[in-house]
Length: 335
Picture 1: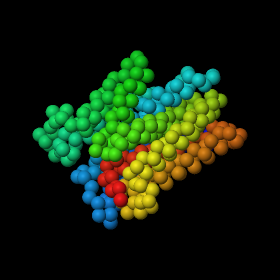
Picture 2 (picture 1 turned 90 degrees about the horizontal axis):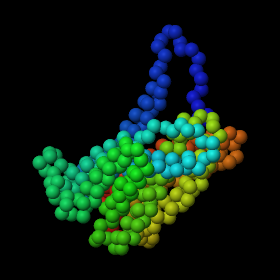
Picture 3 (picture 1 turned 180 degrees about the vertical axis):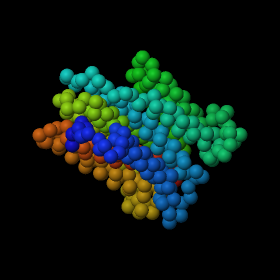
Picture 4 (picture 1 turned 45 degrees about the vertical axis):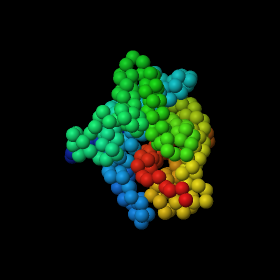
């Protein structure tokens, strides 16, 4: 598949010519709408027949956390690809317009929504009067929620500044806060769990956001040979990221589901069911990545690797939504 749009003939005189990009915008809107249904409607399907009870507003919380993860991936990926581009010989000077400021605004809104839930005792607030902002400073989860809100705000300011690379520090603060939040001090070896989540989330953000940013860059470069070089450099790093994501994901799962109970909990618990769905998605993503790598190395036109890479981005987006849902579901009991 070519990275450039095919030229079209003259518009039919019988009707107005369609606006360029309208079909793509509609497709993106449909995908976003369908994707939002995963965390919103997923809890009821995952919990059905398990006998487990979910926290109030679990669908909304899952959606907010999925949005927060996506907002983290975009700027991280842009910074990653910008660094790769500097090492590409003969790279065109054109670069896609940065989405980092918009991602920071979306992440700020999602983090603010999650903080409001923490401020009401992990209940969904129905009015501003129920939100105890001062209470956030009194709990560990509240302080971490405030760190994420402030970090996205600072990241947005950095993205608008003359040195957008400084975003890396507030974005790192978000990752650290998420890693600590996911493993409370009452858990066995919480620092080990936080370390695994830190590596897992960092690698996932680089993989998802990096691929999205690389494809946007290639679209602006057209048929430039530098495009194949950029894809090759990304593919080599992505292989390492996939290995790290797989290792940390398996280790984290085994910490919550001991080996002897994994098969039962994958089908008998909500957490296990969503984890299984995510594993199938990651396997699909890995197959698409291998297909793209094969085209990159063996096809007469290496840039045809962008076709499976686009499908990989869609599958990775679904995996991000699954991750948001996974964090909102009750943790399985260690049998």
